[in-house]
Image (cartoon, rainbow, N blue to C red; front, side, top):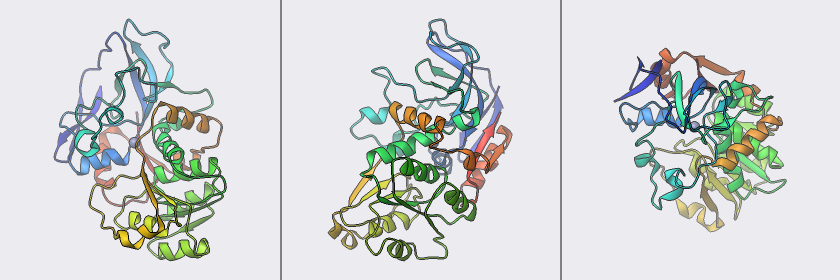
Length: 338
Ligand SMILES: [Zn+2]
């Protein structure tokens, strides 16, 4: 089978390797769609993925073989590559370690293999795809779970004014999850014209182009100089966390959703007087995946505007795609199609 194997030093080479044999409690999945996540791009860009690893954690596919002890799955079942409830002892490391450091530990010993034709998972790991959700939509359940968790961990309340900074896939999903959770007024800031258009289609009440407008001033004028109740920082760009903390209203909540891999200068004296709450959120747990899937299935999260703007790439093109994604792009979503 073809697999994109990280070589170190920003090299990813597609090699032919044997199809893995599932252990007694594992299932073998034939991957259909594997979405390219910004986190993987960062792992590539900062050369943090271990050489020999196969990245990719946003995928859907079908069960094509099972270990002898697996029950509850059948060959041909449509599955999402994650989101199952971990039995005790199998929780993600970040849920167990007091000093979990994603940059240093998040990519050690990875066995995620979404950028390959086949991958194995423990039998409890995948979720079944509901009948009315396509395989293409299903591969985006993981980023949806990130958005769901961000909104559930926030202080957002019914009718709140929220700002989403950055309308990449995570920002567009946060916009929809915030709306589903009852946000009253949603303002989105995003430099890419395509992404701004998709944000409007998905129900943003106002969109700002940060390359043309002063984001802080625009948000202040749209919120009668009060500021938003909640800001979802989905950009991890140099000025956006600073903007978020400056614009949020007194006692408001800034949710740090995007992961910045470089230092961001902040001047706390400018906003500390507002008694702002800055909170982090990370990934999604089983419950978040299940809620995400329910929202997709019920149409409350609409993936059509994302998937209709998707650029499909062949596994052979993955290295050049990663290189292209390392610079700011206009693309909404890139997906490896098998
Ligand atoms: Zn991801």
